[in-house]
Length: 117
Image (cartoon, rainbow, N blue to C red; front, side):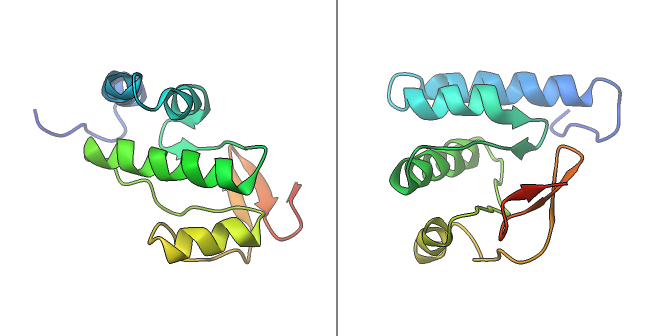
């Protein structure tokens, strides 16, 4: 098989194992990003925070490139920081959308107000 069927009982486990195997290749060069991916990736969603905009941009840029090298498309980047959103747009990583509510692990998140409900 060259594709993972969506909806099989084992699909989430296999996807996680494949991603973890893939990102392990980057431990020597991008350890912080690998640790972030290992701890903050839930099936096909990545949720993480950082202490600064520059750190968040570096982690998100690394995450996009690491996953892209394995054939995974990390998209729909969202942040409560306008500055980070602008950096993503300038570097071709995001569309700059911040309006509206986003689903985060079953909860609604409003990036503009940075409120979970």
